[in-house]
Length: 405
Image (tube, rainbow, N blue to C red; front, side):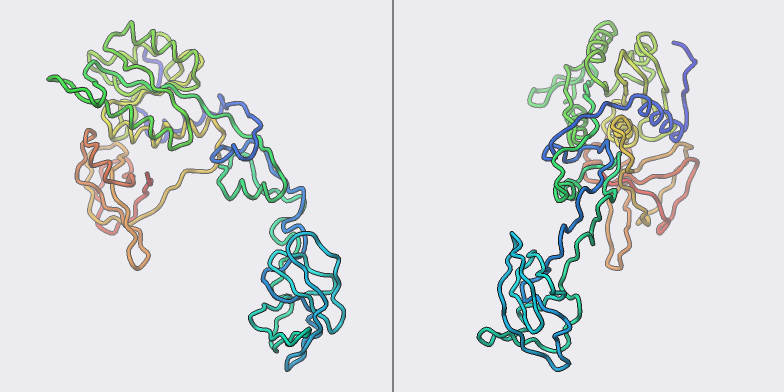
């Protein structure tokens, strides 16, 4: 193998290479109906073509009045009509009058205040209004949420349900979003057996396939699982190059370390390009990143917890970058509920559980099961606790960064 690619680099250096590569390979945009854009990454600026609300309207069921008619000790007004939500009736409130109105109904001309119906007394066709009514009460003004020409959404933002609903409220029925990357998933090793098939001595069930496919689906992608890669470099090369000709991203699990059966680094060096190999992180140090054909290639280590940690920190970053996402993933600060003693120099991602205490403090409970094969322990956790580079002795109460699952 050549030795002209970065290796044993820091975690921050690895992230920077992933970011730069993703920025160069940004996926194209596509125009979709808003009903199909939930969870997608916006690729346009959204400017309001109308105000929101589009007209002055009532925030409550009650009576639209002129506040100038409210006397210090209360007053009685003549009921002059009804305005329900829907088509405006072009009603007007004259001095001494009021109009029955429902929530969302347009405010009649002349009215500036709505009195909720629970505080009034109906006396035939007259309405008794109590004292103490605040001017402008219970009225939603046109444009108080969004004005014409406001930028309401920007490229790179995630289209959450509330954001999609915002565009719908403005009458926008289509949005330009980034295409979703197509992803091919491989697990590796002659020892892997699908669940449901009895194991022979030396065999294990393939859990990485379900782990990685589930992580990708949870991120809104539709990955394709390929057959397990055998411990045969010729067949591995053929299968990976086939996938790389048809998918945007190829992700493998296993065969990236330095053992006799770890063929993938040499194959990527021969048939593609290595951007980096081996990152000073734990778990997941042997992670491999490069290009194969027209695809971006990410080789994750084989231990399940390493698969989880490297996907959560580097794989997800690559896929977000290809889609032009600008919003960072959620990260919190929490106080340790137990000490962490780290003797090595790598950045470590410790599995843990988050707990909110009664006083509002977020606490992180590190898991004592640190082995990268301990998948069940990872399943019982809900966050990765970030321990910075260098030997560290962290005490109870120390503040740490945490990445929620």
